[in-house]
Image 1 (cartoon, rainbow, N blue to C red):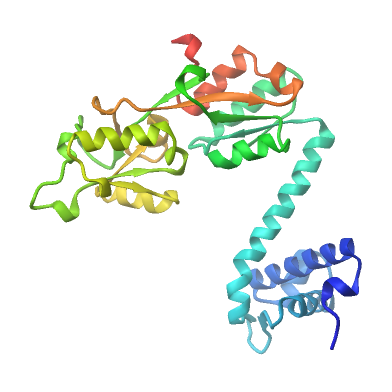
Image 2 (cartoon, rainbow, N blue to C red):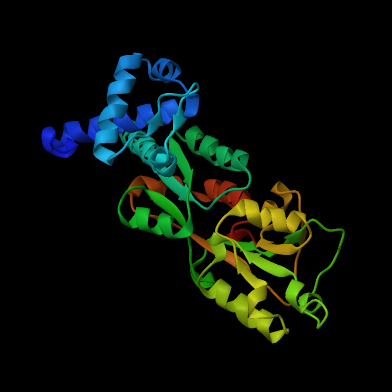
Length: 307
């Protein structure tokens, strides 16, 4: 019996070879052809074949159906393709992070953005001061963990309102012609109890004081607990709001980007409250008032100092 892949070679070589195998596998899956994959990877077809064969040995079974044209994936290949793509994305992020460090760039993590052009304006403002700023969107929990781990220089994090640099008002958005909305109008009736409109909460708002306030307030106005729906992904959430079934809790800027009607709800004065946290001196010095105003625009608000 042949030795496992990781036993046959040194650890560093094994990792590199594993990534080469995963890259070859993903290329063949994408192009449906060994020769086309070889062109994409700037190598030869025999090399692509050898890399995939080595990967198949590690993973314990065939990944590619070689008897078809175009070639297809085996059940194991289909099951592992998403994992392979995740690994390649992580590899790209690692390489990009190393490049940012070598360039001396300041790395900033921000909430998911509806308008990337506004964050590009933030980057240009920083560039005008002679600082290269790399901006990456990420989820709320990941932003905190990556900042604490020293992976980035700065992050925009949710905090209590007393410590906030920015306050982003939230409302409810849907594809609708309505011009006003009350919580009472969302209260289920006996006739539509099973089809009552839902308030969809995005991952950025899925925990903390904001969510507690939402639950307490909607319950006080007679909404059922099941009407608060957590959406792990944006696309299904948008589908429900575009169909007129659900209301998304979001900022006006997000609603505009998604072509939804945004309505403030008087009984539900909710806001995202953010603070810029930095762990490097360069990050602290970079974010002067002008840059903070550009960040505010990208978040869909204004700095609290300007209010």
